[in-house]
Amino acid sequence: MLKEKLYPFLDRYDEITRLLSSVEISNDIKKMTELSKEQSALESIKIKAEEFLKVCEGIEENRALLEDDELGELAKEELKELEP
Image (spheres, helix red, strand yellow):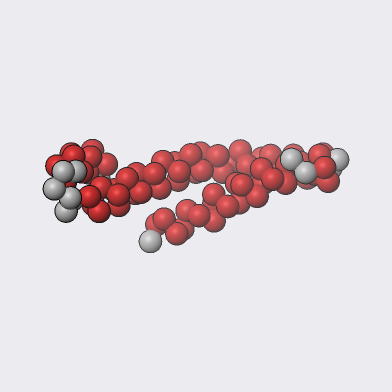
């Protein structure tokens, strides 16, 4: 599924963030520049991936609530907004 394909991008972005904050990398300007460029290239993917995953989570939560007598109607309305 698409969700599983997004996690490596998010993991790599987080890994680069950790590396950039390390002393070893801050002392190596060439490596820091390479990592900064890679992180910059991944940033738009990271943002869209997080948005997508958040919407997927909302859809899953609302589908679980469809059977609830009190929250079912609210879940249907939420799903109308999230699913497109």
